[in-house]
Image (cartoon, rainbow, N blue to C red; front, side, top):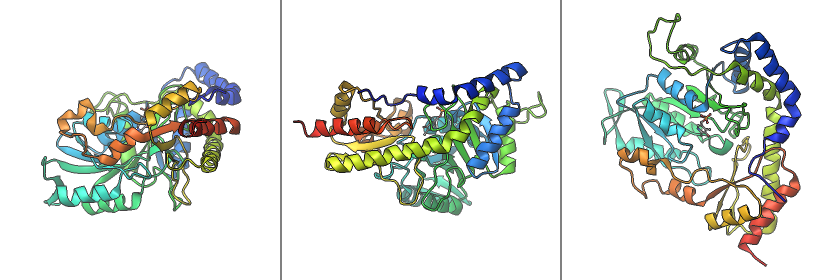
Length: 389
Ligand SMILES: *Cc1c(COP(=O)(O)O)cnc(C)c1O
């Protein structure tokens, strides 16, 4: 048996005719930039995310960057975020000239720990003239950027309360969490000032290349993002702001418009696969070696990844590779220990939960088209590793 980490070909087979017809329509129109496909996608994704405005952009990374730029975050500013995430979360903060400020994660959800944020704000910061200032650096704390990692909404209420109390903006990195809801039924991207989505091919809603979107309920902010997406020119060739080329392609929008109606069914299939894994792991009784993901009760976890915490992770991964089971480590090096962030002055031990997670987590195949026998084979292969013979 072969169980790849991800195989997009079966999904393509189900929508090939519609996708190619949509691509053909765009080609026939020769309208490749910011046309009707983009407008339709922006409206539909904003509605899907229970927000009012969508601004289609070139990637999830550019969605984060555009959100930060539109909120005027830059040199002298700091943004609180998680060190256990994809690089772009902190990379975009640093690219604006601002400083990423890391707070540790919750070991169960792997999301930013609001208690760690509260502790940093109360012990590491002080209020100067109504602004929250990092006592160690003198930088102005401007925003919190929680990440809804693996498809599960971060615990938002305490983060929102901190943000409200100190006048901070909230940018949700929802690259892995389109359509996920917390235990109160509140949707990813609907909490903060801006939600950033990625349509990278491995995400639950993937384009045929790079694409992303910012969604917001703030009309003025949406307009700033629209202008910054085209170099800050409004009217064209008259620049009151320095933006960039952050546009989504009409071709990608056309493909995404074909795919969006399937998204709920795909995410439901991932949930079904996660339930099959959970039950199979319970049956093999290897709980002392493997901890399965914990979804908050009543929440809608969309399982962009199904990530287990295990003993002897790297050996298990090699064992699974030999059994033709694809896995991945999201993420092997927490961001505070990345070479490019040496200037932040962190060392091993600063964020122990993030460091533990980087050493112990393993993502298993979870894509919608997997057969139950394949999932059982993955669990049996893992059980054989811990209990050979
Ligand atoms: C994928 C991802 C991004 C970046 O999205 P791209 O479309 O690849 O640029 C940002 N943050 C997180 C958490 C991601 O998973």
